[in-house]
Structure formats: structure tokens, C-alpha cells
Length: 291
Image 1: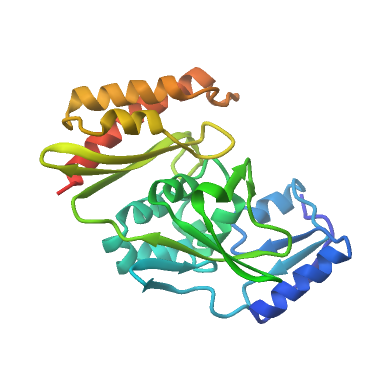
Image 2: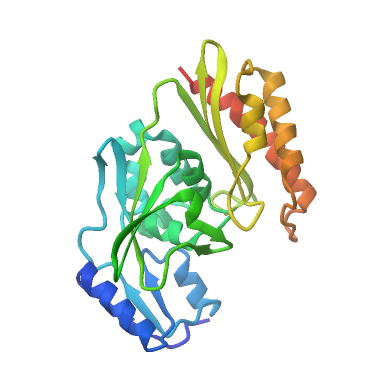
């Protein structure tokens, strides 16, 4: 299929993009922001999305940086996933985000897909929202009233819906560097390599004096948003990191899932089983990296 007709706009500055977006919305025009096009272009082609207008950000300068800023890694929304994948800063200082990036699609997709586009798309089966919850990332939005920072825990509202308000553009994401002594892991099950996850877990694990001092865990592909597994986190604090404590955390996590989604590819009970098993294995990965 081909996309339904739409207006095309390519502003050349962030200020122009914000002004244009506000005008289009004032006129009652359903406008969508085009970043890398990883998800939006297939939706247009299949006519799942039929916006009146596209606001293409690819001519807007200053949104493709990857840098260390005030002790945190700041990535411009238009930086490609491939740029994040190749970034030595990201690979060395935030390996969980780096590993998650490598799981997104294939290299050709990562060449065009933008980091900010994935966060704004907010697909609950994608890796980034879960990683954002684990790392306590911040989302920077720019709109008619200026810039505001949205914590990741407040950013993802429900299925493909974020806390971005009308006229706002996601312009940057910020994440902490990984503290020393903290292990990390991300595991997922997909139907094919590069597909969205049927279920997955991402986590960090900090060890002190031979015990689990802290754990931050999120699951994805099971609900309308990625979800923190707080009961499993609580069970791990103070525990000796071994196969028994990891299996217990996995069982607690699986049991804590209220109502996993079910579809033709995976039932709710299968997803529940996957989360428990993936978490148990991911914890072993993270413990081996925590030094």
C-alpha cells in the first residue's frame, strides 16, 4: 500500500518546528513528527497512521549529539541508534543502553531509526522504555512554553502514549553513567532476530560485601508500558547472589504480573513464564559483570 495524502513540512530550526507544530494543531490538523521513520513510515505505508501533516525534523540542527554533560550522558533525539551503538562513550559508560540498542532491529534499521523517535513512539515491546525505567532516565521536551524535563517513570503513560503535551517535541534523553560495582543485563525472546520482544527484562544489580545491595528491574512486552518489578527487587536486597536467590526472584516476578497481555504469538501464561525465566538468567549475567 501507499500512504494516504498528507502535507509535508521540513523546518530548519527547532524554534520553527515548535511554531509550525503549534500552528498546525491550532488549525485542527493532525500532525505527526517524523524523526528517523523507523516505525512511522511502515505505519504510513500500511495506512495504520493517516496524519494530515508530517513535520520532518531531519533538517533541524543540534539534535544529533551524544556527549557527557554534568556527569550524565545526553543524547539528542535525532541521533541515530547506529551512532549510539558506535559511541565509545555509550559503550564504556552505559553498557546497558548500548546492549539494548544493539537489540533494536537490524543495522539498516538502526542507521535510520532515531533514539528519540523510539522513546516518543513508546512501543511497550521495545527495549528502550524498560531501560529508561531501570536507569531513571530523563526526557527533555521542548514546546511553546520552553523546555521541561520529564522523569522516565512519568513519561510512558500507556500503549504508544507518552506524557508529551500538544506542541512538544522530544529533543534529548539523559541517562546516568553506570556506577562502579554495578552489573547489568538485558534479555528478550523474539520470534525472529530483530523483532519486537514477546517478553524481555532489563536490569542493573549492585553488589556490596558479597550481597545484593540494590536491584532495578523492568520487564517489557507484557503490558501497555514497560513495568518495574518492585517485588522481585525487594526480594533481592540483602540476598546472596546465587542460583537460589535468582530463581526466587524470577518466581516472585512472574507471580507479580497482574495481567500479562495475550495474543496469537504468546499467551499471558507463556509471557509470565518467560519473564520469570529471563529474569533468573539475566540476574546471573549481571552478577558476573558486577565487579
